[in-house]
Structures are given as C-alpha cells and as structure tokens.
Amino acid sequence: MRLALFDLDETLINGDCASLWSRYMCELGWTEGSAFVRREQTLMRQYAQGTLSMDEYMSFTLQPLIGRSTGEVRHHVNRFIESVIVPAIREEASRCVDAHRARGDRVIVISASGEHLVTPIAQHFGISETLSIKLEVLDDSYTGETTGILTYREGKVARLSSLLGGDLSVLAEASFYSDSSNDLPLLIQVGYPHAVNPDSVLLRHAQGAGWPIHRW
Image (cartoon, rainbow, N blue to C red; front, side, top):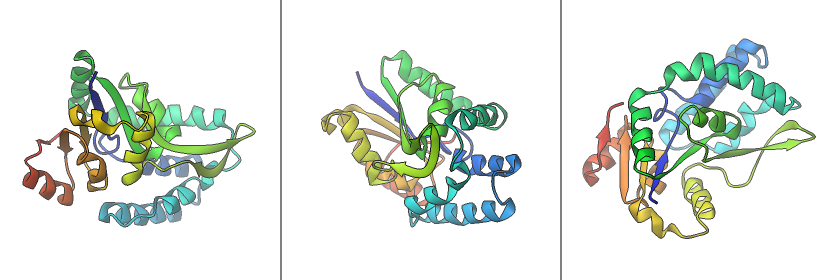
C-alpha cells in the first residue's frame, strides 16, 4: 500500500483554515476583533516568508479557546466548516484524493493547523487519518497550549516517522501534495512530490527539480 500525503491549507482547500477560523472567532465575539485578525495576518506573512515561529502562532491563536469545552468548540467548528470550508474545497483536490483511494493508497492529511480544525475538515474528503498540531485538553477544556511535536516544517517529517514506526523507506513510493515551501523538508523525502499552486520559492524548486506542478 502506497502513501498519499496531502497538505490541507491552500492545497485541498482554497484558503488557510486557521486564518479563516480566526476571522470566524471574531464573528463569534471570542476575540478582540480587528486587532486579533491584524496580528494573525502579520504572523501569516512570516509563515509565507518561512520565518514563522509556530509556537508563537499557536500560542496567540489558541487564546480564544482557553477554558472553552471541547463540545462548545466542536459545535462552532462544525458550523464553520459547513459555511466557510465546504465552499472552499477544491474539486480537483477531491478528485485527486478519490483517485488515490481508488488505487488502494493509504491517504493521510498532514497539516500545520490545529487538530480541532484538521480532523473534521479531512472527514469531508473521506479521510480519517490525519497528522496535525495537538491541543492540550484538561477537564474537557482547552488550555491554550499544544502538546508534542508540531507538524510544521521538519516536524511533519518527525511526526510521520513516528506514525510509520521510524521506517521512512516507504516514502520512496509515497506521494505528497503541497503548496508551501515550508513543506520542502517532507517533499524532498518522498518519491513523488507534487507542487499545488506553489508559492514562489516552491515553484522555483519544483521547476528546477522537474516536479509536477498543479494549478487547482
């Protein structure tokens, strides 16, 4: 069984689920409004430049969840997905996922967004296996902290390696689809890397390496 790995944001969906969720939390009145969004966008520009501290990003964007129950958050995330994410699903992405599934591949979403968003969004693609940033929960409420290795840059390789029992040899036959140069540490590990609507750095790398480039 081959692996088919998919990034989520700007790959399977047209947009970044964490940024979209930040705006949605503003609409819910969970944040300080425009100031929160401006700070989040400043951090996202650092992400695009490859200079972001993911610890800093998660610490900031998880503040509105502190003390909220998992049930409350799940309720609003589900409404957010139906109203914001489902319309942003890329048809080409769905067809690609379906093609890998029909071939019998093991399909996994691996994302640098929080598990509270990634897991339910992946389910809309029929994908049950995900790797994403784990959130700490105590007494059924979010603490605003993360746990474990963050699935960001080299962290994606580390988390995937753990899932595979340390055997990365299977990546020689694996595919990975991503839009971001932040995913180059994993893209260069797989036998079949795919650049999807790539950023400028990834585009140059993909062109130089002869990787397939998709415009979804």
